[in-house]
Length: 140
Image 1 (cartoon, rainbow, N blue to C red):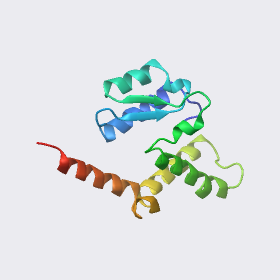
Image 2: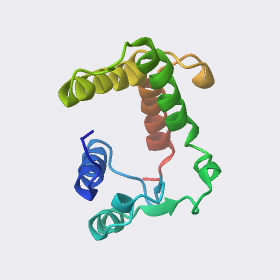
Image 3: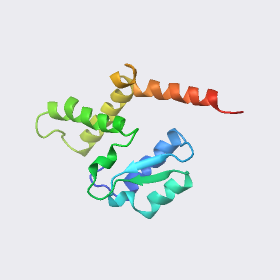
């Protein structure tokens, strides 16, 4: 999270994600049509990791409703209702406060908050179970 949205911000975030969890072959990475998602460094990073870039069509916000993106949309919706709307204006004291608050919420959302859509488990737990299942089903 930053004060602006340069390409470096999204490439750094994507590199961190790939480091934390190496992508599966043909991973689909969906984004809007922002300039930071169209840059050469971002596209090269996806290519190096075998990921497929997916972008919504111009003016078609409903393209973001692809399978698998509903958890991301749920995260943003819950962040707004459980954090942002409960605070007085100004919502954050400064950028550092915003970064810390959002990071804390993401940690809570992924590791502590139970989700009805995944059997009242946390996203982290569900993800770990899917990794174990995938590993058990991989041919040797």
